[in-house]
Image (cartoon, rainbow, N blue to C red):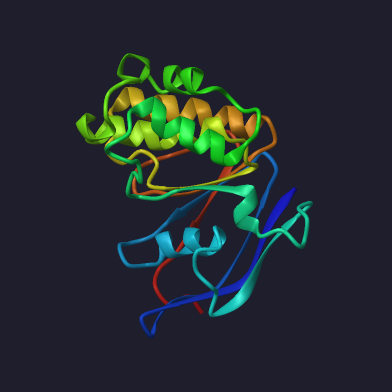
Length: 202
């Protein structure tokens, strides 16, 4: 499977954010998207996830059914944690698992891998920012998708949490998965490369 982006352009609120972006991501590879604030890093991920429509260019996933949107093959974890505060940590993951309907890691295993097992019954609103970020990342484990799209994955995470994410991501890549992540912090994987957005690319 291979993700191919060709001559991509993004317009938000009538302003051209970037244009002329091309890249490929193969099975087992990570693409790290860098650039200053406002360069369009989050918009780039949202385009990949099918949440925004490109102003120009194309995004396609070779080896994926052409009549199924790329978003159906992807997990998108945004900069905001997106968890439901009234539900417990375990209930948040159970909801995602039921929605995805596949045989990935069970809820207890995912919580344990992110160091959240003791907090399984806690309402998400009572978790710290770092714990909520870990919970958001745990969603990657309860529903299998070949493409992970993660916006600032290490934001709010302590050193232990950052190490956990790197381990999980490496396992995903070693299994033939793909990762596209925006980052301001140093972030490297065994098979990774960078693309820098800098406003209006020509």
